[in-house]
Image 1 (cartoon, rainbow over the protein chains, first blue to last red):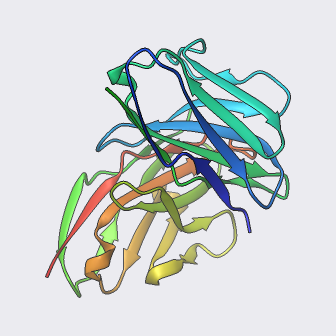
Image 2 (cartoon, each protein chain N blue to C red; image 1 turned 180 degrees about the vertical axis):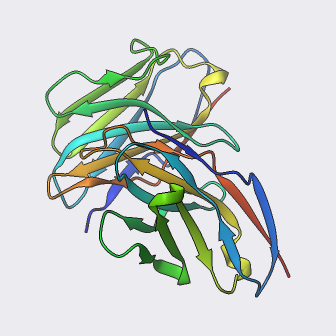
Length: 116
Length: 114
């Protein structure tokens, strides 16, 4: 149980285009989902927290107009990188919290984004 | 705010040797503590976690960790390392439910010599 999927697992796009990444909780309803970014050889940094039906809360330094987060249902959150640039190339990982296991995050497998 | 340190950026051990990866945290109360492993290009895999109770926690793949409140530490150990254990290891701390104040350490890269 408590499986989180991400799609796509990797994506390559041209500079200036937008890319959408999906995060799904497959066997539970996620009260809260999180988006992390990981640059090569670095740790995970929290970008934003999203709760179903409400606006995401962004961490300091994360541009909310560039990284659009939508959490339209209890099993799906999307991250859209708008007008992507090479410096946005990174590994994006989502996580979700179940209402029954509120003190643990379940992580997705990550999405590798490369912007040319 | 809480913080997590992993003093060792890179550790190299021989296959079959014992392993200890250090993790120290800063938080006023007892936090939720986690160890994750990440292979190159892969997502995170939870090795073990501590919420309360017995301070020695057993995890998957033969790993264990011990919570020491007096030292604010949660060190990860394995008695005999296998070549497949080479990876990046992250300690993480949660200071409340629902993912509040959840912080990852900087990570320790483990290399295993044949």
